[in-house]
Image (tube, rainbow, N blue to C red; front, side):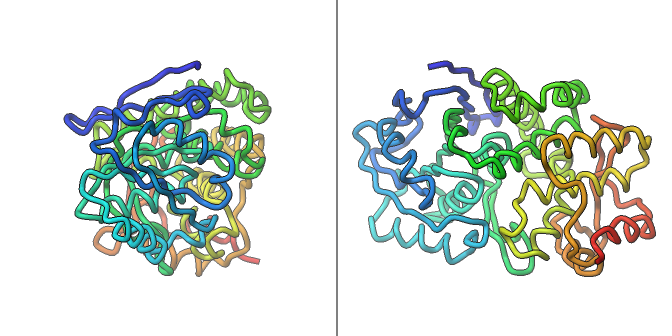
Length: 356
């Protein structure tokens, strides 16, 4: 079992991110991260047949049950979270139970939100099985569900006890979902690490081929960068907002198109290019970002959702303060910042790319 790990430093709520191949098959012991001897595994109908039996080998003698959710962003709703809570109540789960999320970002977000709400918070473990979840949503404690008015409008900060990343799960990930995960990896280079961005430019073909060494490096570096930001700003009072680069546009795309029509990573990819166009950076840097998004097989332009509809959806973004939308823009590649000081005219021009 090839393993490496790092820690999200949050004082007495610090936790490890364990990365490697063969963790599920090798029966990595999760029980040392569980306060009691019972758990509820939350997964979905796609992942369960592939990995649930393997996960059980990591749970030892723990009394475990599981619930299978329907698969897809369209089911990331308060009613789905209620179904998880109903299951916990039916099982008479106590405060020493653990909720284990086995799946992608949707599963992790819903399971984490339910565990944050049940009895005002029970233990939570992330076992992400998609690239996007491994490098982004499983780390940092953001949990939540969507509302018809906007993405992730209902949620809570609830840190996991451990994030267990088995890179072998990526072997069954469809190409489209794999590419969607690359968007979040590109994001880290674009906002805080120009050297990592350059490494991605040189190694994108190896990542698309799912070369183990390249994947391991990209996943670890992404987790390192996110862990550093989260440790500094757990609840997004400042620097953590930078992790939303491309997401203000991306969430609006998802909301306008209907959740699931565009994958989250696809919407973020187009959103990053839109944000770069809003930024006062050299055209050559805009072109580098656009080229890397394209090399990853991701869309660089938004769908024809309509500029006015996108603008309206953006007004429900969580970074709106005093009715003023704030954007994450770039001073240069590898150097992002949050601002409300941008040209409304330029925003209108960028949004016009969504008009038919």
